[in-house]
Structure formats: structure tokens, C-alpha cells
Image (cartoon, rainbow, N blue to C red; front, side, top):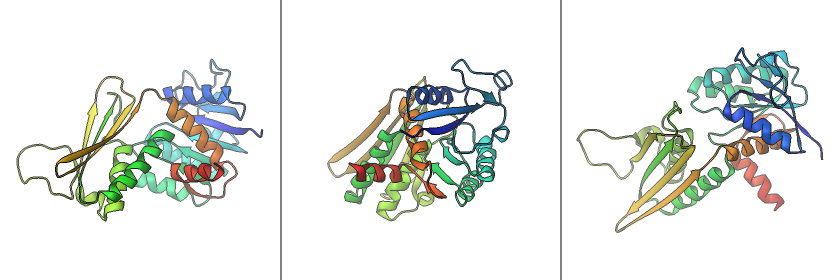
Length: 264
């Protein structure tokens, strides 16, 4: 089996460490290096025997896929270096603003970029279920709730927003026109087109998303719960293998799912 070489940005973080651990357990991957700006780790060899550098620019990146789970401001720099050095990139960082997303899109013109608001294969299959459900229940009202640990800074989650965008796509609405993030005070009753999105930040919950469709006399509820970060790490590795050797372009979990189901 040909090995996929990876460089992990944010190597000292929870996701970075887990990605490295799973990659080292998988004979299909080789971890070339880790990147960590924390001065206590940069320039050292990690406890797992991986070389850690302070900047991605210190590496050649030849033949490697870069996996990024850092911060939005760091992602802009990382994706720029990947484009300059012609290395594919898997971007798992959430909370990117429009300018940062544009930077990722710009890089995809010269390198393969895998960009997804959630790297879990299960969550992305969940989204496909929501796509089918919303297309069949266009007349139903829709609400979304999401729960994450108290350290998560962005709200609503990228996954919740993506779910709302999927509902908008299948029902002919625009997210900017109908999304309602939380409610407060008094006023008009909700319109049928409105999509409520509600964010909870509590404890150490890794991630939970629920979608509700309400019609006359019935409510349908779809829920996905993530109990640990391994599903995200596994998905990131699948994404790295998927784009390795691909031509320049923007790829996502739907592309990966389509390719894998063709094989089945």
C-alpha cells in the first residue's frame, strides 16, 4: 500500500495529537512533521517521536498533504504556504470569516483543497439525510439546535450553518434572509420560512446537532451525537488520502462520499 505523507498543523492541540496518533496506527500514512507555534513544543520531538517545527514554511512539503486544525487567522497563512509550495491541504478549522474563506478558495485554484465544516463521515451522512428530508417536507417549519463544549468560540457551529444552508438550497430560500440565531423579546410570530438556529455551550460535549421539521399535528426530529473527536480525526485522514494526487480544486465530504460509494 502506498503511504500518504501528512504534515499536521496544530500538532500540540487535542485534534492534532489525535490525528497523529491515528495516522501512526494506520500503515497507509506516514507523519512527516508537526507544526506548533507554542514555543515549548516547536523545535522538539513530540512524545510520539514526530519532529515539530514552529512554521510550515520551514518544511519542503514535497509529496505531503497538510492537515490544518488551528485558528482562522492561522489558516489564512497556512493555506497561503500550501499554495506557494504546491501541497494539498485539508482544512478542518471552523469559524472562518468571508475573507478567510476566500483565501481558501483562492488556494484551490492551484492546489487540491479539502474544506468541510465538519470532518466526521457520520455527520456528513446525517446532512445527506437532512437534504432528502427537507426536499420532501418543503412546507414544514425547520429549527436547528447545536450543543458544544464551553471552549468553542464560534456560534452557530459551522455544521449548524451548513445544515441550514442545505435546507435553504432544497426549499429555494437564502440563508441570509431566513436564519434566526436565537430569539429574545416579543414581536411577530415566526414566519414559515424562518429557520431558527440555537446554540448551547456547556461542559465538555464534543458535538450534538438536532434538526426539527414541524407540520400540522406532527414533528420529526433528526439527531447526530458525537461522543469523542476520533470521528473528526478519522475523517481528516480519509480526506488527506482522498485529495492526495488530485488535481487543483475545492473538495468536500460529499465528493469523498460519492467516490467511496462508487467503489461499493
